[in-house]
Image 1: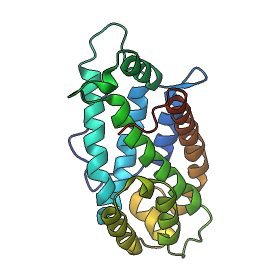
Image 2 (image 1 turned 60 degrees about the vertical axis):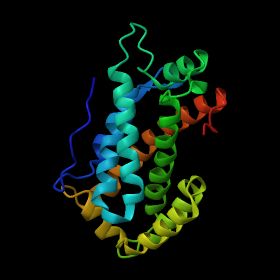
Image 3 (image 1 turned 120 degrees about the vertical axis):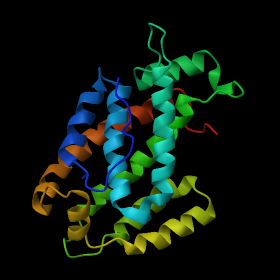
Length: 219
């Protein structure tokens, strides 16, 4: 079982190829996602948030907390059925056992839903970034991606703070140099479509599972 890193050091980079490979590995059967790989991919996404600096402070601290909750649920999952091995088994287990209504229970399904929403934002931002010229500011596509995804789940004050912070986002070329330190911009853009494709499949499978079990509106 993977364990979270103690911290993400500034010298780390957002490894697009690694994220692509982990999300591809996470895909089980035709409709499921392996939890261990999902969390490992999200550790890489955390590096993206942290390397962006204060722009994504409103996301990164919450993401770290949610990841740690899911790691702890997996650590305590000693049942041989391994309820937290995949997203499907977790949703079924917590729903069938009525744990989602249990007072004081820290729900994996509810926790993962917050990460799921964050993943949609990352996907939309990076997908839209492909159409931006290297010397063009990236804050416009970041803001539009945020408004179409995470903003729907944030309070007014968080939305305003996030939108102001996004104006500090540099050009697309400088942004990719900042977060993908060991890969040049051309190579990063070459790798990006594969990562986005695998990320989207994992996102869509997760989304369909939440839809199937009517869990999108967990408070």
